[in-house]
Image 1 (tube, rainbow, N blue to C red):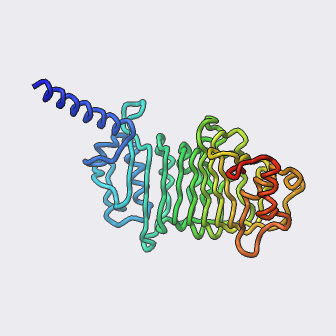
Image 2 (cartoon, rainbow, N blue to C red; image 1 turned 90 degrees about the vertical axis):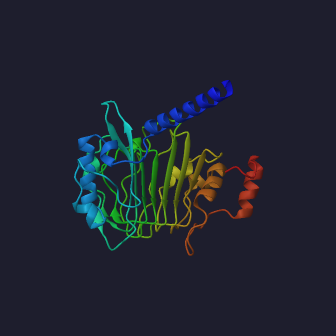
Image 3 (cartoon, rainbow, N blue to C red; image 1 turned 135 degrees about the vertical axis):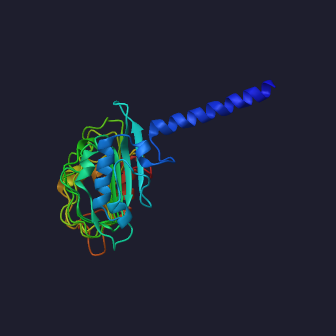
Length: 304
């Protein structure tokens, strides 16, 4: 009997812990959306986002803030109870894989006061992010869209995750020099700008001097130039500091302050090699030279 009581107690505690975790993190559970998001402002914003977006007719024109029962396929909304005692939207994943249903990103994203994470996926998303798009977010991903610009008034200093990948028509990024500037120095700054075939000109320059942990990949784009000063200063000596800017279309000669410093030269070698076919650097050291330099510096094979 005691064993049975103990077992029931364990089960009840486990169920309670699971429920608390769901409320704390904000989850998609069963039941009408309006029952989970009881903020009228958030519900109205969600209706506007749906009406402007690339979704089927039934979702575009039949949404009522007080009668929101379901989300379109592949869309997710994450909520959390906030300090006003209401459940607010803190995360959104909006997918639009059907390019025959084009739509735009609504200005109403800026009305979601507690929104932290946004993932926008699919070729149905066209145009550009609105000027005041989701100004309080800390994480954004834009993947496989038809957007041409994501240059808007995001609070870049607070963003810790910035992913822009496989957007073939994208031509404009915001100035990323302040990206992650206001993060706690112990936070990981995660940046991916990859395979955007219309992004050209100078590669983004990201100031990571005060960041303790970072992972930055700016690869497989059409960038043709680079600010060498950050490249010369990047530290990439362990797994918590990683940067890769290969397979763009950057050519030229490494400046003297890099080639005259063996540590910086080795870093530049690993950060910038290889570039796309037909591009590269006239004074980049060879594989054999890098091995020799690292041996002279007493660096292990894995260090750069």
